[in-house]
Image (tube, rainbow, N blue to C red):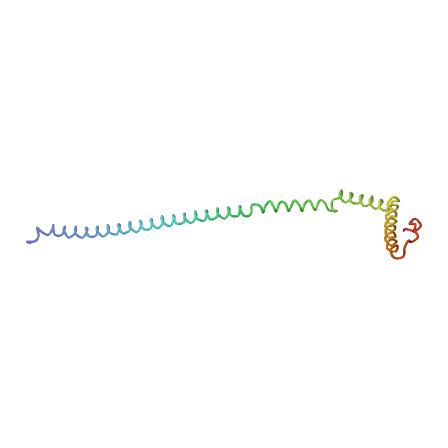
Length: 161
């Protein structure tokens, strides 16, 4: 009984000490959880900034690649277009074009008609006669030096075909 007046404060002290230890443990756990959450948030922020830098680098690389491609191949497209235009012009100028085919046919008919005309045949005979006269004159000159004067040859008596 002697301890009876002290029992209440001792019990209260023990209870409060236990509850303060329990509260301290909870506070320490909460501090650890918040520290872990802060680390996770910092990692997430760092990772997101890393991804942003990677995306920016990729965009710059892509931009650089397109710029190089534009510098190297900007004339290629115009060359390809010129080739397409030339191919189209060649296709239009072939015998598949009916107007071109008709013009060529008319020209060949007219040309063959001129070749077989009387004027053209007479012109060819005059040219052949002149060639024959020139060759006879050259032979006569050569013979004159060796045998003396030779009787003149009349070219009009030589038949020319």
